[in-house]
Length: 401
Image 1 (cartoon, one colour):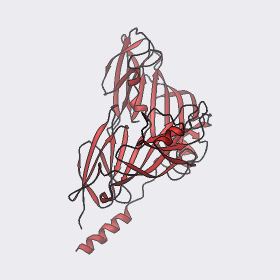
Image 2 (cartoon, one colour; image 1 turned 180 degrees about the horizontal axis):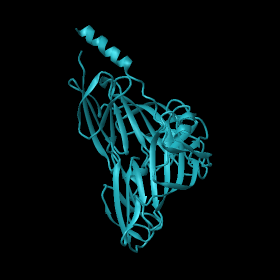
Image 3 (cartoon, one colour; image 1 turned 30 degrees about the horizontal axis):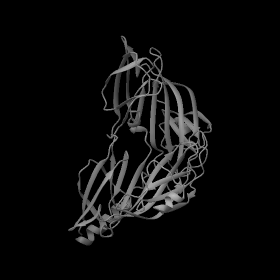
Image 4 (tube, helix red, strand yellow; image 1 turned 120 degrees about the vertical axis):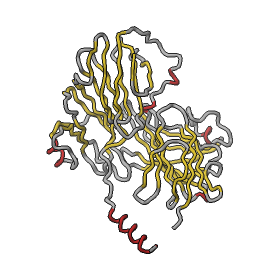
C-alpha cells in the first residue's frame, strides 16, 4: 500500500502544471488627486517586469477611465521608453498570451530583455485618468472611492484639503509641499475597497518635528527570503533585494547581526544580470576602508559587514540589487528535541522563510501566507505594514513516511 501511495504522489507531482513566471511584481501606485470637480487624478505607477526574456510590458487601461498624458521611463537609467496603446488581441500576439481580448493595454518596449534567474525590468508609467465614478464632489467635500488591486498604494490630496475620513487602515503623512498623503500596504488576498473623504482646510507646510519617523512603509523596497538548511547546522541561505536611488552612491553595506556568522557572499544587479564584487570586513578594516553608512553605528573590533560595490549612480538613475549570503546562527535557529525552531525579528515590510525539505509547519506566532514551492518545501510570507519589527517564531517537525 505504501508503494502504491508513493506512485500516486509521484504521478500527481508530474501532472502538476508548471507555474509561469508572473508578468509583474513589486507594483506601487501613487494617485495625486487633481483639482476638485475635474474628476481627474495623476497616476505614478512603479512596476517590475519579471518574465525572463520579456521585451515588452503590458499595463491594462481600466474600463470606464479615460487616460491621457502618458509617459514611461526606465527606472534603472531614467531614460524614456517607447510605448503604444494596443487592444487585447494585439497584446496576445506581441508578448502577453493571457491578455484579455476585451481590454486595452499600454504596451511598453523595455530597455533590455528581462535577465534570467530573477532578473527584473523596472519601469515607471505616468498617466492621468479622468474617472468621475472614482473621484467626485459631495457637497463641499471630495470623495475618492476606488477598488485597488495593487497591494501598495498612496493617495495624495489636492493642496488646500484635509483628510476627514478613510475606511482602510493607512499611514497618513504631510508631504514637504503641505499636501496630505494617505498610504497603505494591503496584506489581504483581495483588492482594497478604499474610500476617503476630504474637505477644504488650511495647514502650515513647515517641516515636521517627527519627519525622520514618517517614512512611507508602502514605498519601501527592501525584502528578504530565508532558505533554512537542516536545523542541526543552524544555517540558512538568504537573499535580500534592495533598490538604491541616491546619486553618487556606489556601495551597499550589510551589517552582520550579532551572534551570526556570514559566509559565501555574492551579489547581482537585477536590472542587467551583472555579477557584483563582495567583500567581508571586520573591525579596524572597516575604518581603514573609509566605509561610512548610517546602518553601521559605532564600529568595534567585533563589527562585521559584507560590502558590495557597484557603479556610482548618476541623477535620475537607480539600481536593484540582490545580495546573497549564508548565515550560521545557533542562537536563533536550530533543534529543540525533535522540533525545528526559527526565532528571529524582521524589520522589513516583506520577509519570507522557506522550510527545509521534508519539514512541515507546526507553529507560526506571526500571521503568514503559507504556500508550497515547486520542489515541495513550505514557504511562509510575512508582510508587515507597520514601521516596526515583528518577532517571528516558527516551529516545524519532520514529516514521517
